[in-house]
Length: 146
Image (tube, rainbow, N blue to C red; front, side):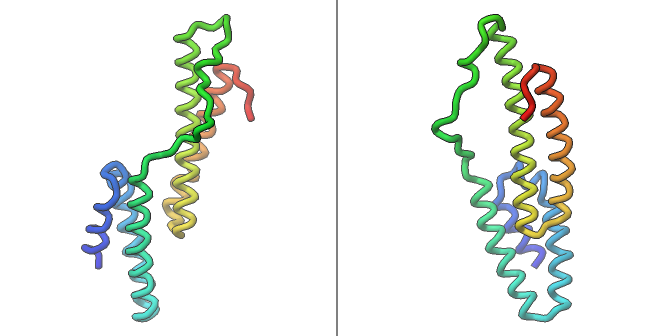
């Protein structure tokens, strides 16, 4: 079953596989061993659920991220006393820090939903670091903290 699982992991984009395939396979092996000890029916249910989850997860990972149609382009609201280059650089840094926070939160939620607590812990730690960095960047550019 390990070979089938690793084959299904190929459905994910290469960037996701590079970051998570080894850990996903290790967690799968551990969970499969636990289910195997519970009997055939729980084991086969587990395998079916994992296969479906892999296919759906890979499909979701390949969908492009959608931006809300009503989102504002903050670059158009530059204060008059700030140069365009400085304002753009500051916004890029703040928006990138916010994007990392959002990504970590999303991955952590997906891991918890999939009962992958090792991965959830990893993203929890990464989320903490990303939020600290976002706070630093917002203070650096004197942007009010939310």
